Length: 89
Image (tube, rainbow, N blue to C red; front, side, top):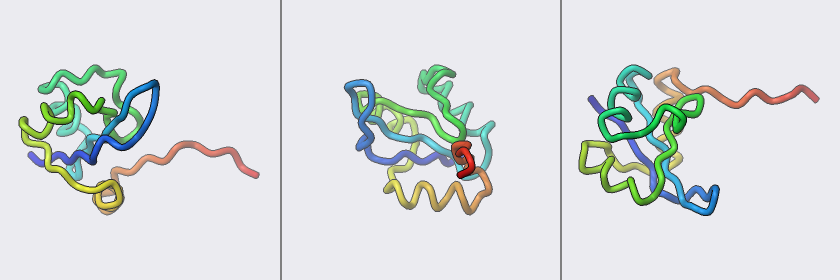
C-alpha cells in the first residue's frame, strides 16, 4: 500500500491543508484515510484534505511525502484524477 501526501500549504477555513492520494485505487485511499481517522467528509473528488496538525500522523502511518506537482502527476498517470466540473464558456 502506498499513499502520498503533499506539504500543508493549501489555505482554507483558517487552517493549512495537505492532500492525501493513492496512485493505485480509491479503495486503498479510503482504507488508509479511515485508518488514520479522516472523516468521509474530508474526501473531495480524488483526494482527502488533511489539516496540518494531522500531517505527521499520516506520515507516521506510512504516507509518503511528495511535492504537490508530483502528487498530481502520479494520480493523473494512474487515471485517478477527477477534475472539478467547469461550466462551458
